[in-house]
Image 1 (cartoon, rainbow, N blue to C red):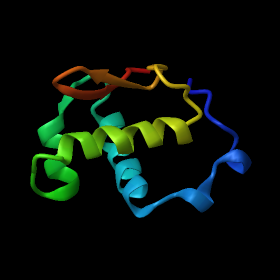
Image 2: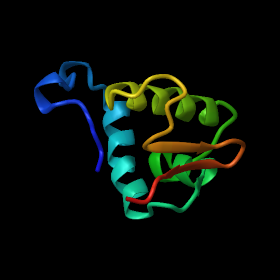
Image 3: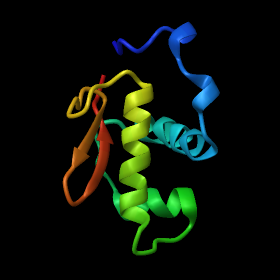
Image 4: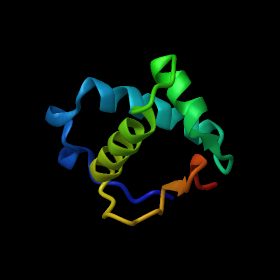
Length: 92
């Protein structure tokens, strides 16, 4: 079971449109829990195409999502970064 921040502590006032889109992606990730989704697949599903800065943009925004989930830097309890490949969310 995930131990996330209580709803009243979740910082919805700082939820940017990009973070919202990536939040929707978290639903997609959770529907494919345990499977690695490549950076390219993620980027194409969010932005529709991949450019030179897309992977870095994805990584920065994913770090922001982790922060909003209450994770500390380097804490991979929920979202796992498969270096050089993509992301996956742990099986429950």
